[in-house]
Structure formats: structure tokens, C-alpha cells
Length: 355
Image (cartoon, rainbow, N blue to C red; front, side, top):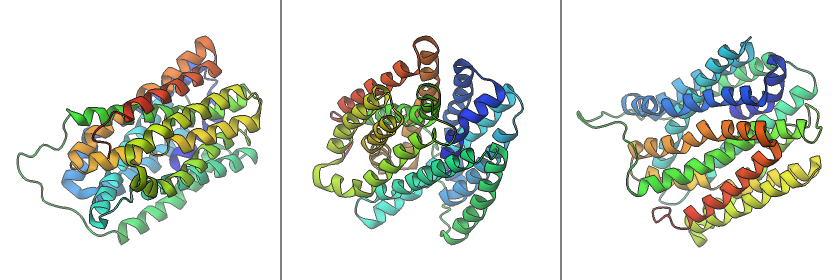
């Protein structure tokens, strides 16, 4: 919900500070930098406090970052706030994926896609809530403040009800390593998938508003469609994995995502763009669950390393789209994302550890 709420109000924040596409790209670059640079911190939190406490601490940081974004009066402070947001997202994601990998191991069957479906529940409802807030003329500060209060109560409830998972770490054990060997292939697939997800999240609303003339209330519906279809696909993802294998699901899904992106940028209408982004969401939905599941089987250190490569896509992807939009237009920049989906399909079809 936090991620989708920020994505839904990017046009409003941009307009309030009068940011050009290039300056908005710098803001998004700050968020990606926070995400990538904080992965050693994420690994340290898990090693010393356990994923349960790591998720709680990171969640508090996320809520604080959301408030700081709404309060930022200028570009430097907005960059600092998005840096904090990126750091909180990476620490939170590593913690909850470590919890998910452990739960999947105990279950003895694939459940990671179902767990990631709850992320889509949040992004879908967050995008719809953001659309409603923007359509009603509610300021980002009031919107984010109300959301922070609700999510703080939910975070506290989850922390109290999850079992304590803190374990002693052996002396000399490394808590973070750069991926190597087959883990690099998993990291590169996650890297490209993060570019696609991040670019759609950060730029679909801007595209809807600037290229298609959608109002503030309609613009977030592109990301809502993307997230909603991602949710539906992830609900069926575990069964698809058991039937045809993770490699095939990710590869063919990425091709479907490419088709969706091309439909969105070529439709020329609000309804067509929403439909295209929705198709892209369904196609790219399996990248993170299955890549993180494969990496998580090799331990939380491997997971943190693969996640570092993956979220590097959030570091360079949305800003690249912004710089391409500055020179060639946002439509051409998003078409580049569609071409990247084809690359994900080719890489996934050859990834031996993606099982």
C-alpha cells in the first residue's frame, strides 16, 4: 500500500514542486539508490534480530518516509525522503521474503506466489485508494498521514502475532555476499523484472495524465489495473509452477508482459492503456516470487545478494525511462520497457536454477 500510494501521488508531488521529467528521474534515482545501498543493512538486521524484528523496524522506517515525502518542500528534501523510502522497502522486502522462504520450506510445497499475491492486494487497494484521494482533491499529506496511522496499527498487530524467530549467528559467518555463479542469473532476471515493475509504477500515472489527458483521479487506475492483474496471476502461480515449472511460467509470462506494454503505449485511449498495463502486470507477476523462492533455498545471505541485483533495477530503471522520455517522449521510453520484457523471457528460459 505504501509503494502504490507513493506511485499514485507522483503526478501531484511533481506538479507541486514543478519538476521536469529529468528532475523527477533524479528523485526516483534517489529511491533506487536507497534500496540498493541498504541491502547490507537488511542482511545485518535479519542476522542480528531475525526477520520478524527486521520487518518491524523497516516498516516503521517506511511509514516515516511516507510522511517525509508529503512534507518535503523542495527537491533536495524530497530526494532524501525517497532515499529513506527505498531503504525501508529493501530492508522490509528481504525480511518478509526470508519469512516466506522459511514458511515454504516448512510447507513442503510452493506457496511463494500466494504470499506475493498479498503484495498485489496492497498495491491494488493502495492505487484505488490513491485514485479516490486524488479525485476528491485530498492533499498527499492528508492521504499519507491517514494511511500511516492505519498501517502502523496493522504492523503492530502483525509483530505481536508472528512467532519470535531470532536465532544466534555463528561467529565469522558472513551476513552479506555479492551473488556469484548461477545466483547471478537469478539476480539479472530479478534486475530486469524490477525495471519493468518500477517503471510502470512510477511512470504509468504520468503517462496517463500527460499523454492521454487523464485526470488525477483516473491516472492511478493504470497502476491499479497492473496490480490487480498481477494479483490474479499470483493466486494461480503456484499451481502453474507445479504444472509446467517456474522457468516456463516466467519466460512465457514475460512475453505476455511485452505484449501488454506495447498495447498500452500504442492504444491511444485511456481504456486501452489500462488494459495494456493490466496485461503487463499479469505477465511479469511471477518474476519476483519464483526468483526469490529459488534464491531463498540457498539461505538468507543468498536471498539478500540476489535482491541487491534485483532492486538495482529500481535504481536505474525508472530514471532511465525518465531520461529517455526527456529526449524521445514517454511513449518511446515505455516501449523500451516492453523490449526489456522480451529480454527477461530469453534469460528465464535459460536459467537452470529457476525451478
